[in-house]
Image (cartoon, helix red, strand yellow):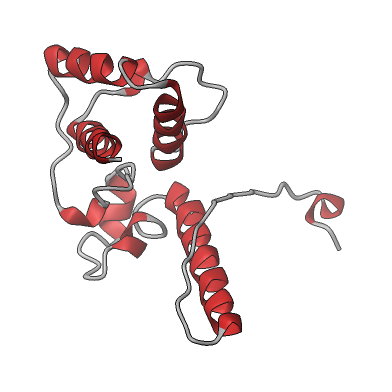
Length: 156
């Protein structure tokens, strides 16, 4: 029986994932890639519930997992280049640093700018309904991810 027919409201969390499979047997490689993608997608979906069910899944040492931490600490936003388990602080950026990053982003060629936008939205869970990313660049975590993206774009 469907939850809606019982008068319940369903909570839906979605995530996208990618996986890679390497094996001599093509079928096993494909299976490994699918499992990796499903695991990645599940982690990204659970991340929206906060640290105990989301970000802690990326922290093999489970340093920040406790019932008191879950109740009092808002979960930081994950980013691709620097996972939350890196232990790096998430300090506010100075206006000059924000402006410098925005100028570097504006200078990207159209294809890289599109890749940046898609990547930033995916990593920091920014919905497509938010028209501009410029005002969302506010912390050192954003800066680290952006600088990593720019370094990769420059080497490509």
